[in-house]
Amino acid sequence: MSFEWLEHYKPIIFAIVWGIVLALAGAWATELGEWYKSLQQPSWKPPDWIFGPMWTTIFICAGIAFVMAYNRAPSQEAIRMLVILFILNGLFNFVWSILYFRMHRPDWALIEAVGLWLSVLAILLATRSYSPISSWLMAPYLVWVSIAMVLNWTTVKLNGPFPR
Image (cartoon, rainbow, N blue to C red):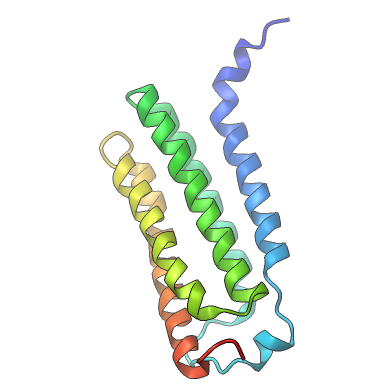
């Protein structure tokens, strides 16, 4: 039995599995308990219910961007870099949730968010020459993380110093 067909679906399988793993890990890490509810939030903060649909949309766009960039990558080195960047991005995303929601350290999460933002930018820049659509699919992610960083910074200003 030949598994040559699997080679064609490898990026799709990776994107789906990695997206599910990140979504489950993020759901586990995001604890909207008493501590979170006690935080002062800025008046412009989006309602909590919007975060789930936004992250779902962003992960779908990122998964599509990954598959498109993988299929258009000019070399094995470009593929390797793409995989590394997406794994790093996912880890930054997960660690931010741990720092903010589980460890109750929005101040540390804000510092870590710089790495998250840079990882999204790195994917956007790395793919633009050979998959411009992939770059554009990452743009909403960059915007959302930028908004999240300003929200994170404002929360730190309103509630710090931490821990509390």
